Amino acid sequence: MSIPPSAPALTSLFLGRQPILDSTQALVGYQLLFRDSSENRAAQVQPGMATADVICKAFAELGLSSALGSNKVFVIVDSVALASDAIELLPANGVVFDLPASVAVEPAVVARCQALGQRGYTFCLNDLTRVSEELVPLLKQAMFVKLNLQHLPDGVLRPLLSQLADFRPLPIASHVETHADYERAAALGFHFFQGYYFAEPTVVEGKQLDPATQGLIRLIKRLNADADLDEIERIFKSEAALAVNLLRLTNSAAVGLRTRVTSVRQAITVLGRRQILRWLQLLLYSRPSGQYVGIERNPLMQLAAFKGNFMERLARRCYADQRDLPEAAFLCGLMSLMPAALGLPMTDIIEQIALGPQLSLALLSREGELGLLLDITDCYDSDDPEGAERVLAQMGGRINRETLNQCLAESIAWVQTLATEVA
Image (cartoon, rainbow, N blue to C red; front, side):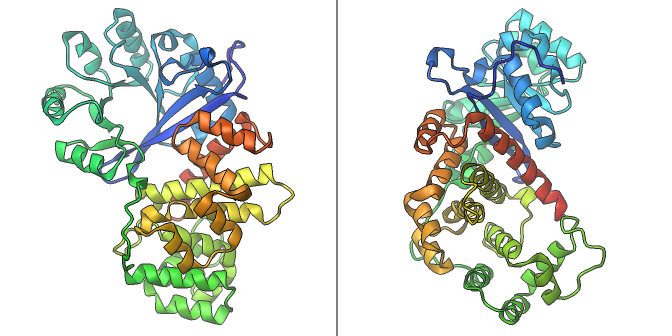
């Protein structure tokens, strides 16, 4: 795609993202947020004020269209960005223009949306608080509408949802920050949800893990202790579900073998300890019942995989002289969400899995290089550009915004392919 010459550089762009899920926990798409991290706060690109050329340049240079695959990409635009010809450089089949309801009543905006709609573009009205006569044209055209769960009480949401049933848009509950928020939204009748509510840890002191999870942890602990092949094979064979999934993984398109693997021992040899250890730690994000839930319908597993891959990529770029750090960074990102997955304090998890001191210190107190990498990753997850600036300063200029955003796009693409490769 060609980019307008006026498009600014991406060296100061902070690219935030937030998942949008359906009622089955499958990923519908991502909300993308574009922020300017420069010290000149007056020039900041606010979420609703991102210029069209900044958005287009980010899509082109970061390869976001291919990275996000078949998922919808919600991009907040204002009336100025919407009116720009540059916006038509974005792929109509993947982008949803997220438009504040406050500007959707302007006649020029309605006309522009209708013109873009004829070219295949779709829309979402965000921060809707009431259905007015002026909004009817776009309510008949928009695909989605967002209702802020934190700002609207149930007494407003119920009649509003009832009114929206007469129009086309699918309601999305936005600002779903906790499990309680999710339960409230689901009870109100929402089928789409935006937020990181699934990553909120619910820690229960003294909790007993189910047998399937105990078996996983036993295997991870023995692999960390470099147990011999006979012992690893024996443990796998005692966990029938794990053995089946190991063979399934080994024979997947991701491994690309010409002949089918039919034994546990052969699968262990083919995959190797490093890959098996990663896979087992990812399996800890399956549901407590012990039944394996694929990554395509497990947002916590997706986020854990993303954080691990993102941190690994950052480690390779920031600390190229430390050969073992990328692997430790992947495990650090993967394990950072274990309290949310297992309902246990991080201290208990570390004791059971027996991690090395470098990884333990990063997870418990954010110390060392791994601690800094985990901090910068969390800043991206919490949409905190100021915090990211602080951590980047602590890292001594080892990496810039453009490289961070490139790693972000690459990690999103990696997670997108992960589910299809092991399907």
